[in-house]
Length: 273
Image (cartoon, rainbow, N blue to C red; front, side):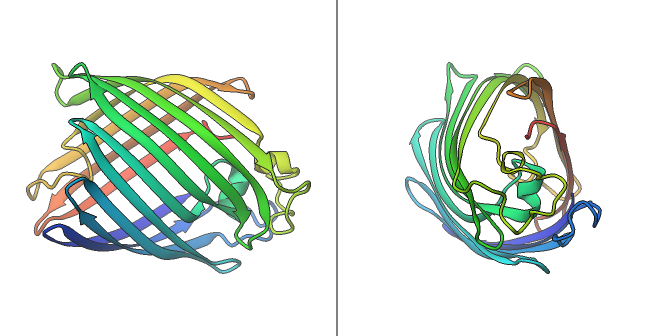
């Protein structure tokens, strides 16, 4: 996938409004996926409100594609529970699914999530997340439903600049098919010969990772002409495929005048089904 996007935000006091426009081009042959269009356009607008307990965010948009466009939306609420501890709740409608190649091309999902992030013993990091999903094709044919649990246990190495963290992570996913055959939309794909290829019933992974970041890319404003960057690597073992999994993510950004920024990110991994 090659993705290009532009985003803008206007903030005033506790309120903020923003939006984005993204273009995604999927690289595949017509003989592999004859039913699918290769390019989709992602449009979205959102509003944020910061209150005494945390932040509320509401977004609405659409993912436009020649063969099957769809409405998208989400609501997210975060709560500061204690110093360094945050609870986040969210609901997403027609979210793009990246679990398998077939799902990304032909499907979407409704998604409810709950996560807790906290620090402990000064430099310790704990992240726990639970997700519930309902999968369907872009033309609203049912596929399945499921849930997942993820946990990260990490440590900040403050004596090193830029910020360096190491972590141990694990995840488990359990899905349930809501149909006994592959939906008609996407049935001609070479990557989804069976329903199990499109949505596996069970998947788990455990591994270790490390992350280096400088000035927190895309989050904290910095002066014009200054750089920020990040690099993240994870390696682990995946079941039931029983192979080594990896994930690498990197990004660099350059601050421009008037709080604008240009950035470039890249991602490569095999830790999906």
